[in-house]
View (cartoon, rainbow, N blue to C red):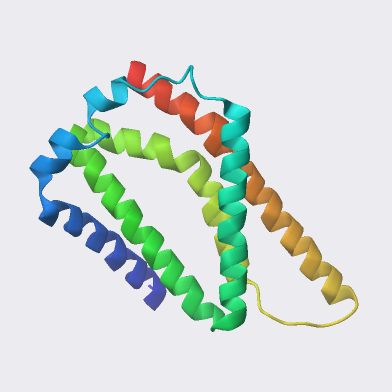
Length: 175
């Protein structure tokens, strides 16, 4: 296994451990991720178009931030640090959901993260695997095509996050 994969796995586990060390009773009783708190969520009040625009803005800010960071420091460092932070946060959220809800929490976590997470992960992997060569001619047009493809994948992820994930979450919570 590549060294980076081990780093991401360890980051995920660190996120899980931190949540467990901070106190499982607190997360079970006061977390919004417990079943009672989730049942209080009303999906009728969501303005999905506004929500979609907010998500697009947030994700494009992240993409631009990663691009700028990769121009200032080595891209490999940006990739490893960003993926490690995301892995730790995913581990923490998975732990909170499971502490508050048991195995149902793991199903909730999958429904809440998987639909759009697959697209964002694909866009991140495509971006991180691209070399930073600056050439002219045909290769320059291929560079723009790759950027457009990555942006389209991010937009599809935003659509999933704004419309598909809330649908799955609502069906899961109300069942």
